Length: 419
Image 1: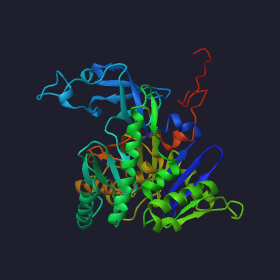
Image 2 (image 1 turned 90 degrees about the vertical axis):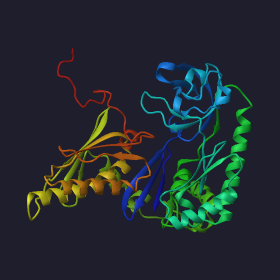
Image 3 (image 1 turned 90 degrees about the horizontal axis):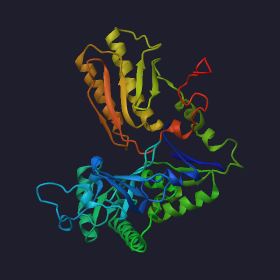
Image 4 (image 1 turned 180 degrees about the vertical axis):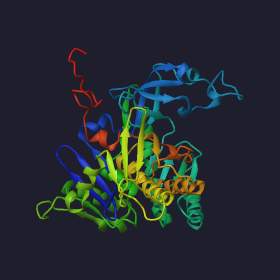
């Protein structure tokens, strides 16, 4: 289920599996400069740094965005000193003052500017259009028979000169639905391409829709029992959008009238209490164990403890069962708190190698439900798991807090005021 709570200063979206909160998003009016992932811009190259193999691009936001060499698109015939043996250097591809078309792949976080790519893509309900590309793919989450069916449809509707990637949401979609999605995206791209040639300065050419529409576009399928929204204007906007792209799911969008209902929407569906727990440093496991989650600038550390879980048979079995439970909860907390970057998990030491492998496998299996890309290494002899999770935007705690003005976020105040 998707619950949407609209407040004057922000909109909150909660994704529930059963009664369990698994993901949470926040959108504020001031996010136009920070929540720009997916937006397409006409950018102006400010300066090129050969030693960093990157260029800083002015896209009209407070901080210049960064375009790395690997994300630059070019035609080898247009590069005078480019050779077939090696890639041309970034200073051969870009120059100061040049105007380029680019898309944001990562929001600005802290002191870092947004990250860009010239490999533009336009996401639709069932497919992603990759303009001027040969890209072609079908979601690996679909079974083989469905992939074969979709491949036949896509071969017929694929537009000339453009690439297509079929999304998981296309499962069961008809050829007409896919064709309509492709036609809408091609028309959208032609409008963007035409606007890109009309000026020289930095400009926004395409803005990703409201975060509620975006989450529903990415998430809503036949598995969801409903979308509940407590704002009438937003409800009508979402209902019209779903009615246009997926009519059979339109009746699952419901208006939650706060004046009629006894409780606010987040209390009615137990989101509020789960959100408060997600801001705590400590997470309790059902059997009595716990997780302690600490964030640093470099990485996030998660410590697994047995706590009150004393088991019934022997130490190894108790620790193994506790670690299995922790692996499932760690995956949920990473999604819920939107923790990105380097993550180190300190599982309780297990003597038996087979148990370590099973816990590692359980963690990977739980993370498979997470759409954000992760990479997990095996449990080391010290009981540590090193992993990374792609950081697209700031996490839950950062989005719902401000740094302490007294201690600057360090959590300490020095005794001597002269220090």
